[in-house]
Image 1 (cartoon, helix red, strand yellow):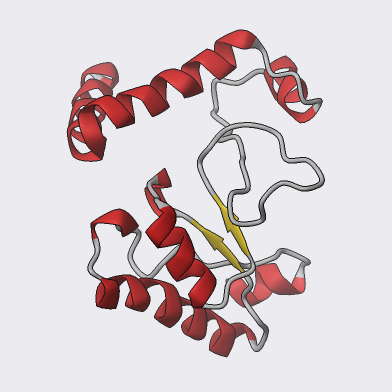
Image 2 (cartoon, one colour; image 1 turned 180 degrees about the vertical axis):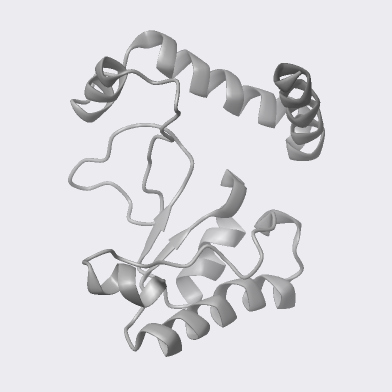
Length: 150
């Protein structure tokens, strides 16, 4: 499937070996996540893989430095916002798109003036991550999602 996506013009980047919190890893495990996933993709696609997307949005300066040392040239974070000329290539911001977003919501994000409630929603999530930590946040989120499905 990755080869087909590449053939159709999609850029394939790494997201680590098994989608773990990179900030929790010792240096050897972090190196495995970054370098082995890159090598596997490059061997499969027969092309350099210069992009890395941080799994679960958690990173620090040590993680960014390890990503740089592993040979990546651009890092996608889960930090929200627009990127402009001069944006640090190791801190590319982005928006996650949700099913609940309307076409108007999507247009406001693409045009660079996201509606306030969308920005607030993302900032609230980031604040919850920082306040509770990812483990407690994920546990609470999963509990709430199970309740919502009932």
